[in-house]
Image 1 (cartoon, rainbow, N blue to C red):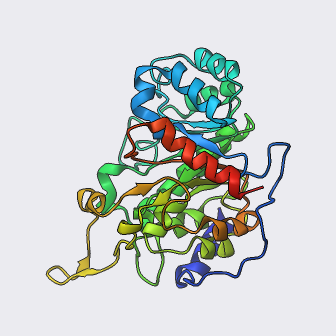
Image 2: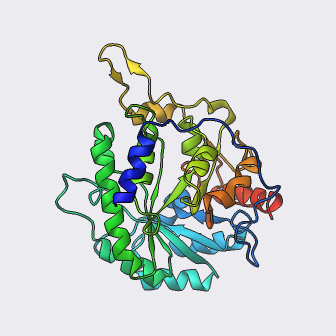
Length: 331
């Protein structure tokens, strides 16, 4: 950890560069397989279909496979039983196998584990057992303690980093790596341009902790994904790919001051929701053709279509539209 702390001290006074790095490649060819690059062999974060999964997980996975997806990212494992959507790990594994689907990664709720004030932490050992049984390579923390969004400061992010390192030490024995997935609140500044995500990156050990960059949310936060790839090469082994409605593409102003209090604005989830709308990949304002030229630099291994809310009446048509775009545009 000493090296990470030295890195943080070195980085703390530096702002993340905002410019776009010049493209280096004409197509994403990072770690190609017989199924293509991570962008061609795109997966699906199953949270996208959460309402349908609650009704019939087996039918959902069958339809996902029929569209063409070869792998999925799970979410929602019960921290005590390991069950997903009311079915056991063994049952889920069988459904995946029956539909020729793999799962390389899963989102596992660690809000209490990452909260320094919580005493009833989630069972990380159970998560490791579930991920190992499913054949997953990554256990991803999808959110920080949501009940403390406006209380997250440098000490809280440092604590989260230490906890991720500890979980990474535990999971390493099973051949699994722990990771963290961002939204927008990790880009609030704490002075000198230092942001929550920078603290997590600086205080976690690269051999223990990876990051899953949500390209929608970092863009919505007004940051440049490319600048993070440049400053922290190889740290972003997974991406979430979703597009942004063109009429709702104005970045959030996370760091304006409240003149009444002299402090930065607090995070208001309801207000953010009003200015946020998603789109199927390729139909919105995010330039993925340019973005993926940085896949090698980021360390990309797996990527997933995710759409937090779908507005089309047929949700399968929505994920097919995103899948078809990726197949058409990437090798």
